[in-house]
Length: 272
Image (cartoon, rainbow, N blue to C red; front, side, top):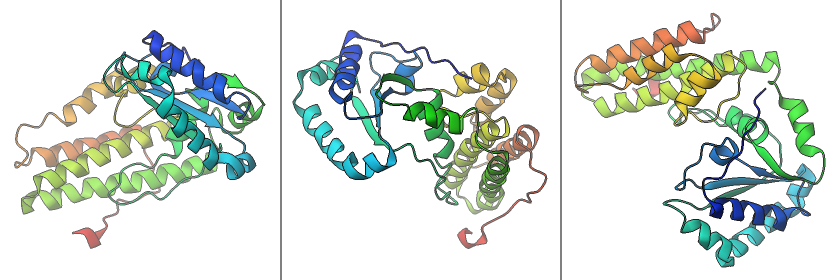
């Protein structure tokens, strides 16, 4: 189990987080510090990510009004102008959440869905600044250390299917002179590979487009894999067969690190 080590990069980040915690302490089940500040990885230019946790019935009754209260207060409170002056992109990103987690549709070309990301960032990697009730702990008991084995098998098979679909398109698109579509497919397959990798190891991810070294090397302990992931995008000529070779390498990594013998590669021929 991960232990959060929160740290603020500037006093302005700390002041804004404390103001939010105090402002919403009596109206929520928990006020959560998220992402880079919650993990002690933020810089002065980082945004301040937070969430207000409500029980589902509270969310239905008051979620929208809390969001309105937040937007009005954020626009007028000096403490947030101080944060914005602390660095580039230093602002607050605040969500009102219900703690209800369910998979959403995973499209053929949309890349990974956010199911594991939301659970991990809200329940594992988050740091509670305020807990007015026991709901956050209830959710952690329900979802940590990981969801059910039945769901895990289904999710792994599904993610592998979409990853392989993206990889299977690359050798078909490359001869047609569509290098940027090949690159897009490779990037989506790379993110889906990371999703499958974490599912296969029963570990919740942080993100699929950043903090890759932290996740693959520090959390999963796979430094040799991180090196190979970097090499996937070291492409000299997009219009050559090189990108096809990269896609085959990623296919090998998928079968080695996140295998699923039940699944056959699938091509969505409607997109060809």
